Length: 196
Image (cartoon, rainbow, N blue to C red; front, top):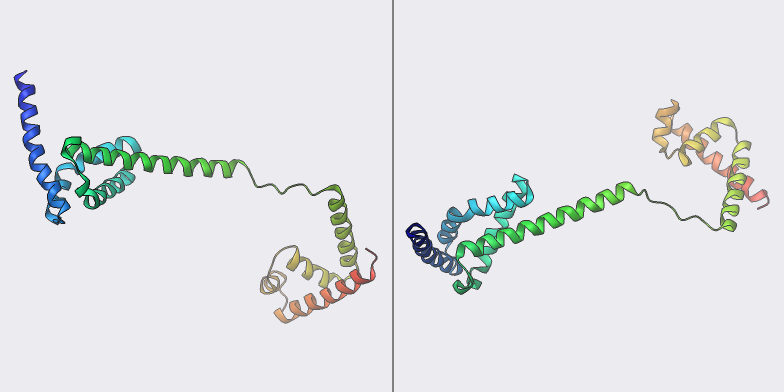
């Protein structure tokens, strides 16, 4: 009983000094913020670390907590609790917010990884038209000389640049450009002549 009373008296005495520190922070005294940090950063770190399980994130939470204390020190009301409980509540709140953000981000990434994007199925009439177009293009490509066809296919179906095609085929860049231009001209003629 005596020990409990002693702890209560010590906490009250310490609280009175800390309340003055919080008042100093409200007045913009940087030394007061440093004093509060020295007194409560360890407790804030322990709370954040227990919630987050990550030292790096817990350190960021402690930093955020003391930035918030700097901004909101004038809002502190002793009748609502001790400075230590006010700071602990802030640290706990920041840590829970961080945990929610992390959980939301992880869930989003899992969802995106689990569900590959799917193109909606085109209506049957559109699918038939696309198939006809593919057949027309394949037929027109078959008419091209082999070098032009290969170069056009590498560019448009393979997604290679003209320089990449030149390196891949060992041909001069000018030759690749000419083959693509001639091949595209012949394709256009063949597609315009072929019935849709």
